[in-house]
Length: 352
Image 1 (cartoon, helix red, strand yellow):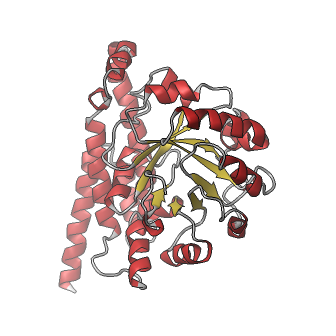
Image 2 (tube, helix red, strand yellow):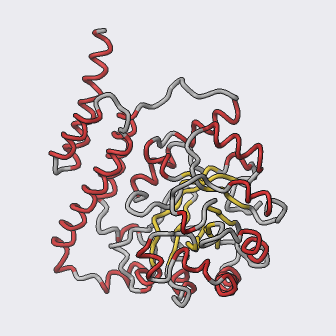
Image 3 (tube, one colour):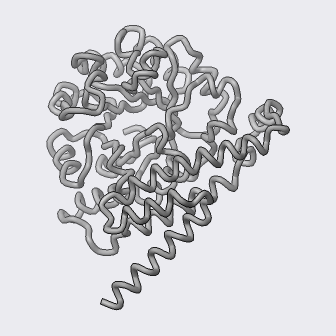
């Protein structure tokens, strides 16, 4: 097993990269709730090459951290990784994103259209940064080609392979093709299974039937950040975790506390390792600082609302909470409102 993963397969519960969702505050919330390895949002290699680091906060994090990169097969991944080598212990190449605009730009799952080119490029990158590079793929572009992909990737220096068990053309619809994993389970490279892992029961079934090196969890973690802890508990105890379970309001408070820390760090230069910090500062137009900050705050408020609405799905007072969050423009006010909601909820239970 690579040093980037735990020696125990069932400990390797990994949070998926999700554009527009897995910002630094949510990543920290996942880490606090049992995810072993945390992925950043996809970052285009050209943004790194342009040193716009205040726009793409991929700074140092205090957990097992993977920066996921995407771009066309002709982009200079080696130079990009060289610039941010001190930011993380793992750099993942996205060859699986099925989103139309990413495919149109010849990134993500577009690479799956030419497996020979994909393997050659990944081989170059992984040999340059031995022990640090991984890859995320799908089972194929418009038809399953998993055996061909995995057999060739095992000849590269990638540390592990994450497989979303659908083709690119399936997007996120339909049942994952988990059964294809049996074709490749004998290969030595560690492999992570991804796709529709929404409960401890599904996780246990996958571990028992296919014995992957770990599982990657995406959308289910946004609605329930505790899913990592819940899966671990279920695998070890054989029953669902009910005691000491954080409720959705606690998650919201934790998330907005992390978000406030994040906002107060803008424009993040204090979190960028030297000597890249000096280079990034030299490119930053300080005269635009206030305008950039307002733009950044607006973006974080939109993102935080979207994440908050996912977390409170199914909560009895979800509609009321959503309406209040929409009416508030200040993150501190949102956090205070949620804390007050928790107090009122507790008082109501005591009265009953």
